[in-house]
Length: 165
Image (tube, rainbow, N blue to C red; front, side, top):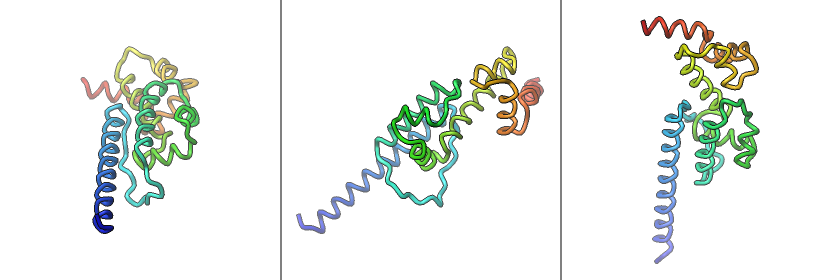
């Protein structure tokens, strides 16, 4: 093999590796979406300063499981980064690049989606929902919900009940 053919072979290998990583990234996006975590499209203007490797995507899979397990307990970004054994800054860079959101946004989106589901079920009082989702008190939950949806939990429940009648 001459040098030119070796370079072509290496280029093909790198291309196939990048295609595998892109496919894996798309699969992770689907998993996060299916796990009730909304994923915003990644910013196109973001220039990659670092190549992401297979183990980065494995960490995101672990992160998805950790979020599903602990989103009701109100764990912080540092808790998740300690569990994955990377710094919070690195974890936020990874989630921002691959999923288009910071880790904090992913956790908040998951808590918001669960709160919407629980508010649609009339069996729970709003304060019970607040405590089940790890908020200190119902007022903090109300501010959280209003900040992200533009309406209070009570108004959301009332609007949902009007639509179902």
